[in-house]
Length: 466
Image (cartoon, rainbow, N blue to C red; front, top):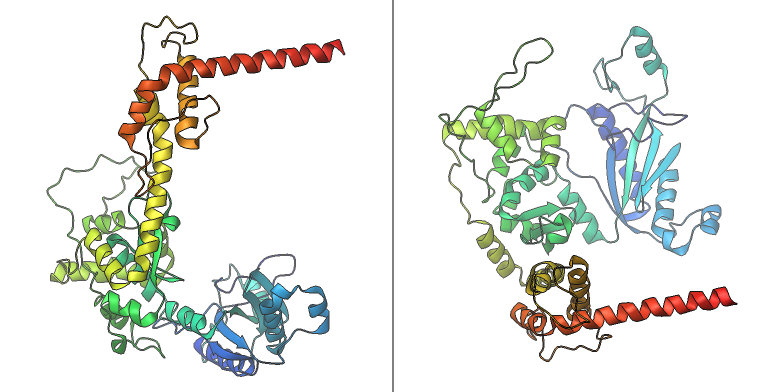
């Protein structure tokens, strides 16, 4: 939470940003204390060149025997809360003065600031510029604390995956933006491929996990694990960018054509001066960003430098200007071939989605359109088709028969409407059924409506008579 978890409320705590010396001191002390309680204790490798830190993230797994909550906690906590109970024990061991449970498996702690550690900087502990001298003095006098986020993992393997995924700060945000255009997603659970047909309706549902193994993720992205430091930060931001650029899916798209038509004139601002036209390359880059990526550009300096400095520099130098991998369809095929265990869930989810979409479209695009718009009909049970209410009633009754297998009206398809191989509807068979039976179904629906009406009428008369 960037060190702000305790900054609000009736009794806020002062958790300023930590200079490197304070961060390293508290990190070592916390790790030493937690190793007595857990088999696995780790903190993600930070990004390069960090001048200060908002909080400390620590992932733990494998509570050691004897690591249990105090009797008061055990008495009130259900068995399912055991992992959180062990985090409470860990918080006590760290000397936390306050804790905040954001979600299961995550306990945010406020531990005392080590005042005996010198950072060598005059601005130690500053989180923002004070508005006046009084505010600065008040902030300096307030007791300081360090925010420590304790993450409970279910296994050592899960802890290693989380440490890998969060290593090097913005590296994985950058790589995520690189692979997104080819239908891949890098998330907390691992590397996923997105189903293009489902994605417009639901991005999470469209994701199918390929692998959560760090070595397999790096190999598929074309990244050399030996070329990156996994136990220390990159030497510089440029070194991180250089490593990210070795991803085989990275390429620099061309800037827009400078001879293209000018955009419409912008309205003047409050000062009467028109806003300057954006840089064409920056506009092209911004057009390729998602809303979350645009937020990262504004809020995360390294991510911003990737888009505003590194990519334009590569474009100007003519580097990485040719795609090195195939299009989205070929990358998807390659991914399913490389990770065959993902093929079955991919195909099952796609088929399930197609079935749902077809059921939704049958009434609109197949059933209703197969009912004639008008006809000469002498059957008293089938009013003229020009009556929209009658057509809607008939279409609804046909949909119940086709989609819900509801044969209460006594009309049943003579042929199978679904294909045995995949369960999808044979839309030609559905049209034939509607064409041959709309009159009978409409008449039956009208009779059923009249019978229900008469039955309700009799029930009301009986109630009034009583």
